[in-house]
Image 1 (cartoon, rainbow, N blue to C red):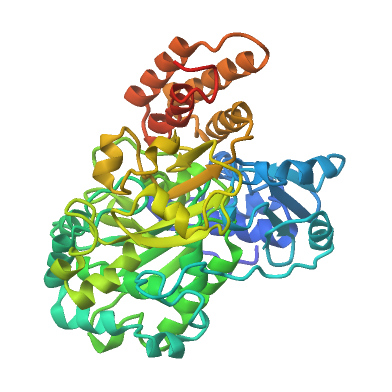
Image 2 (image 1 turned 180 degrees about the vertical axis):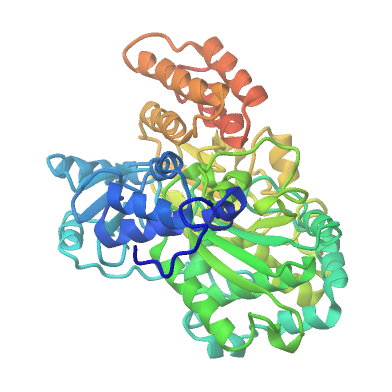
Length: 565
């Protein structure tokens, strides 16, 4: 016994109960990530030690560790390369990279890494070193990466800076310099927000008509108002930076290129709703974004812009950065909250909604990166002035991730209302003809050239039976093997389903099986696909099951697979 002097209660009284364990449980994923980063896998000894320190049952800790794709519970090489074989990378060399490394145990296939603008891409995990992204990836670059040599990919905006709002500093201001950020107008919005006060800021956000930019398009001001007026005084703010939708990379560009804007926007949101703590949950496959956000948080705290007295306001707010570990489902807001709390990243039933019963059971605002950064302009120019851009139902500007068969892939900022064709012209146009465009990501829909005149607004997309989703505009050449692309999308949802509910767990497998039989020569059973889609949409717990069949059904409608229907 080396724990200090014994007392009469030792050996007879247990002091660590349910509440004590819950207070520490939220440290489980950070602890697992640290072990993974240090030795390359989660050993049984390390897992048991974590369980003892955090008072977590080993079975529950193992259930969490085995849930995430980037946490290994068996020994593996010190360096492992995850090569993307998803919808953007597989058409431009990703499959060739994997084929050339087929005999290696340290090269494995990966879902989308959020690097579609510089595809093909790979993600390097290395024990005892820093993780890194290789993009664009070549056979030589992969060999160098496995030897520990990685060059950081630059952040580039292929758009004229004139007229940009959300992207105006990206690529033009040093992301590691708080001084440069402030010289470029940074932290002016925080000063205005403090002077206005929380209710006025929320009124501005409501007047702006800002709607969530992550795909659901829920009015931001309504969320903020609900939490600000909650009876419980303890509240939380979450920035959802777990950007995992195939084809999406806009939030990565913002975090890598303008991290202080994300921190400032989170601070404004936190003060407005009365939260004392915010969490930024970033996907593990974004090491550069994580590093820059962590630096920005530390620099802001040192400058008095975070902490017990934010910018001399007398109000406390601070930010903690949390890394995911490879799980698409954690982009769903309640799954993300469970992940922060140290549980498996499985969605919760709703209601209650996060604004009532969110993180740690407290009222919680959760917005994605792009949504929050828009708040800076709303505060400084006023909500009504912000709403003059775009349309009545789709206000402001929108970031679109244009990739695939275009001359200049990248993130483009345009006012709502620009047409699909005009957006493609900004990206230099299609390079090999348009076979189809995937709008909204894997959870979106395929569209064809008849949609080029469609205004990119929430209302116009809904009228045409599609969704803007997370802002993906992925162009496929006319020569694309769409049967292969659609099968990859089906496999993606099968892999990423958390398995908690039967409609999604079974439905994603069954629709992939239908496609497999079709690839083997059988007629495509469209009626069965529609039945599966209906059950998943009506009965799944979360949006993954609701949208897992959309791209597949749209491919059938356009005749990309199985003939015209």
